[in-house]
Every structure is written in C-alpha cells, then in structure tokens.
Image 1 (cartoon, protein in one colour):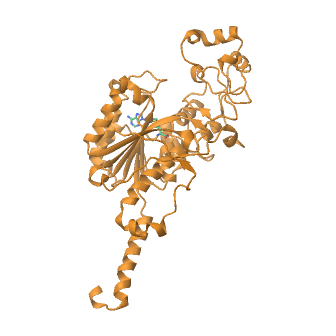
Image 2 (cartoon, rainbow, N blue to C red; image 1 turned 45 degrees about the vertical axis):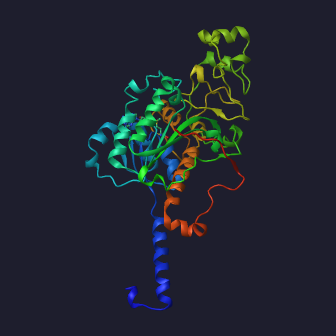
Image 3 (tube, rainbow, N blue to C red; image 1 turned 90 degrees about the vertical axis):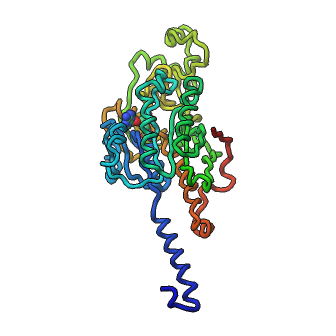
Length: 387
Ligand SMILES: C[S@@+](CC[C@H](N)C(=O)[O-])C[C@H]1O[C@@H](n2cnc3c(N)ncnc32)[C@H](O)[C@@H]1O
C-alpha cells in the first residue's frame, strides 16, 4: 500500500507502524509459569514486577487454596510436577518467556536432614529440567536455600549447574540476602538464572543491586492486622521472659541456660538461635516453617510469644490482604517456605529488564518509554559469581 503513497505521508506511515508495534509490545506482558508455587511469594513478586502468570503448579491442597483465594483468575494446577511432565501436551499450555520455581529445599537446608540429590525431594529438580526441555522458555529462574551450595561439598550444586548448561542455557547464579532488598529479614537464597543460548548473546543481565536502606522490625511491624498466632507453653514462656530484645540463651542465668540448651550447650558455634528474642532495631532472622523451634527461636520483641501469622507475612513482605488457607500450622508453613515478595520482585524486574533490552525496537525508543528501575545513587553494587 505504501507504494501508492508519496511525499511526507510515506515517511509517517512506517513511523506509525513502529509506534504501534512498540505499544503492542509494551501491552504484551512477558509470560511466566511458576512451579512449586507454595503460597505464592515468588509468583506474586514476579507479577508485581510486571510478569503475566499463566499458571502455578503446586501439589499441596492448602497452598493451592491460598493461591485461588488471592488470585482467582490465575490457573492453578494442583498436581505433582512428575505428572505435569508426563502429560505435558495434554495441558495445552501457551509458550512462556520464563519458567520459574524453587524446588523443595528441605533436603538441602541446614535445618533439614540433607538427603539431597539422592533424596526423593531432590529429584524434582530433574522434573523441572525435563519441563525446560519440553517448554523451551527464553529464560528460567530457580530459587533455593543457601545450603544447596555446600551440599556434598559443593558437588550437588556443580551437578545442577552442569545439567542446566547442558540443556542449552547460559547460566548465572548469586546468593542474595532479602535484607538487601527491602525485606526486614536476614534470609539468604541462591538464585540461578538461565537464558536460552540462541538469545543469550543479546542478553545483558545483572542481578539486582542491593538497597542502601535496610528495614528493621520497627519499620514494618506497625499496625499489623490482628490474626491467629502460636503460643509458647507456660514453662518456655517463663524462660523467654528473662531474655531481653536482641538477646538469646546467653542472657539467661547459667544454670537455666544449661538446662534449656540441653545437649546443644556444649556444642561449638554461637547457637544464637536458641531462646532468641528479636529486637525492634534489627531485621528478623530467617523465618522457618514453624514459629517455635528451639534451635531457631524468633520471639516477639516486647511480648513473650512467637510472631502471629500476619506478622510472619509482613516479615516476608506479603501484603496484608494476602490470605492464607488451612490450619495455623499450615499457614505458618506456607509463609515460612516462601520467597519474600520484595526480593522476588527485584529479581523479576532484573530478568524482565534483560529480556526487554534485547528487543531491537526498544533500543530505538528506550529513552522515551522506559522509566529507571533504580534511582541513581540509591543502591550499591555487590559482587556476583558465575560458574
Ligand atoms: C519452597 S516451597 C515454594 C515456595 C514458593 N516459591 C513461594 O515463594 O511461596 C516448595 C513447594 O513445592 C511444593 N512441592 C513439593 N513437591 C512437589 C511436587 N512433586 N510437585 C509440585 N509441587 C511440589 C511444596 O508443596 C511446596 O509448597
């Protein structure tokens, strides 16, 4: 049609077309499928970063109920990943830009039994890899506990990276601490990011830069909505009442400390998780799936009790209207298993930024359409590693 036009109009039309393409692209969100979705910490963070969630896979009914309650329009697949892989074609799922998920970490975490790759739970990683092969997303995002790095003297992690690379992905990883990303909690998680090799040369990915502002409990536990919460047995409460904010078993009279610590008393290490009361002026220590474990106690600063469900959720940076289904025990477990929403959002923004930058069309228009994700001078860069 352009051939029949002449003069100034011929120059305008390609520009309009380019603009329309750009607008279409901006409206067309990048798509993510979330495996092992749990209560949705990672999925919600990615959505907040602008990703369109096309499905969440999760095996536990309570976690699926949580996802359905909060995101009725999301497609929730209550299934074992093994079955999704086995019957992948029957699910009729659309193409995706990102496959994300934090496979069950109990087998790698320091608190768990460290069964690892030989453990049944470790094998779900291989199902995730099969899904990568079937789906061929542009990128993947894997999240896991710090313990994964050290498992079997690093052999497990090396094997994981080798396997992912062999599936035609360029792979980078970094240990991130949520406290560096607007979360009032010291929680370290390994993030492994891969870009399909056919596009990876055009990709310029950087892990998010840590914030200079680091929130502490007093910044985030204001006006927390009332909710259910666990309680200490009378005997334990009496002991914890002796511990000041920021203190632990060391602040107990020696006789009581010895009795309370039991066998751990003579073990090496600070054991600072035992009889620990968090202070308002520090971030919480990493929340666990159960709020009153002896080795990983996190007592409220003023009141002698564990954090309530809503306090737990705030510490994990879930919004107050994000509801959790199931028993009290199940709610704590879902929250304690989650990736903090703010951390997930930061990583999601970084991956999105890398994929969007790749588009030639945006290179032309970027100065006009993009708003900076990070304010200059607000963040400092941290070193990163890759294998
Ligand atoms: C670490 S949690 C994920 C937390 C989640 N990423 C979040 O941010 O809230 C791992 C989840 O994997 C689920 N899971 C374990 N084995 C599974 C399997 N075979 N298929 C699907 N989901 C599974 C567990 O029920 C658990 O909710």
